[in-house]
Image (cartoon, rainbow over all chains, first blue to last red):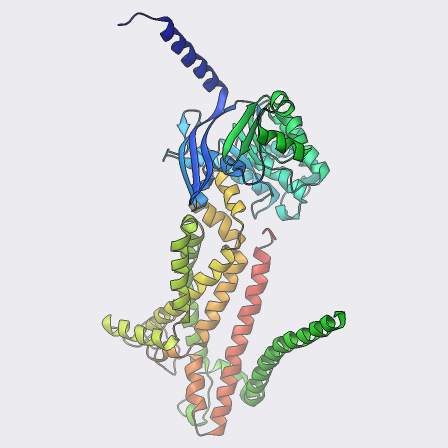
Length: 272
Length: 284
């Protein structure tokens, strides 16, 4: 047995520090590479997504933000052209390399896409389906949950008299809130949002943003946005991407007010 | 310049409109001829009675045998086509979604099957029938027609399923649905009106096809009571009557054609009605 040298102590401290960050991170991305044919969409991404914080992914169009978001819950499966390698740890499970129960891992993450896609069923069933998938059979409990989730996204009073009409009858803004409620109903730990307000009117956008601010107390949120002001309002952690690489990341104050890289400087100038 | 454009626009409007309306006019003319020629023979007797012994020489009776036979064959074949076709179309649009090349190959093969003339299916069904030691029967007819219409069910349902945005599948998967649950609960629901159209197309093709049942279903003046009995069909009934030298019998051929047309129309309209009713919750 070697004695503990100063160097070794340092290593131990490093490991301890890493452990600490790992404990605090909800998602841990290691060496994530995504190719579409010859095109290297994501280039060796290593990223820790902090727990119960809002992480905003920023970057010009086509820089790989959405692909990164889709890799997190393995929706890349739907796209033939994407060749994904690396690890994405959700807690202890590596979603990219685990063969067991991908649906269960996906339930840990609610998805809010750019355009709302309510399921082709009633407003009530949109939320109830997810709860049923969790194994809940008690009708009263399901109804209670539906009401609670609709209240949580501020939709209850708008729809309580037409819960059984088609979700398609709602406005886009309402649909997006319904999709958020639907996602929350499966009790995720993480919310993935891909430009969730870009198709919405200002009022609905405001409501969604307000919800996010509320939700971050209990959920880890990863949000892709093009709106820099939204990033400033929401972010606890900013990740700036450029051509598939993470260029800068950290505290929004530091990253947005004092950009280090030329790419981010240019992006911020164009964006404001 | 501007004037030229307006003139050009007018010409195109007239030409495209003419192409469209002339087709409708042709359809109208066909229906008109069938009904005018067959009208006097289109009696209650035609649809409620079996042909008597001398029917094909102008004797008493109707074509109930052919109506029943056609409905049995087309109905049975559509059922088989649905049982095979719906899962296949869902598979193409869920599990195969990642494999574009396989998807395209499967679609190409199905399109080719769609394009094969029905007499070829008839010959194939006949060979199969002999090989299985069957005789011309309702069952052989159903099987042969189901070969003919299964590709139609798959491809026309598939066309509708393929227009469903991938975002809907992403939404379902991220809620924790499995691929198969997504296919059977979400895609099937969203594509339901497409499925109705598919059934309608398949049934219409099945009930109207003569060549595939020519060798396989046989012909009889009775309504088949069992799957192994031969069955008459409307297209063959029309063919036999139309080739008669007796004008009265030829007239009845037109009446039978009118009956066939009415059956297809009724099924088409009711299918549309049900498609509308059951796709209420669907996203537009």
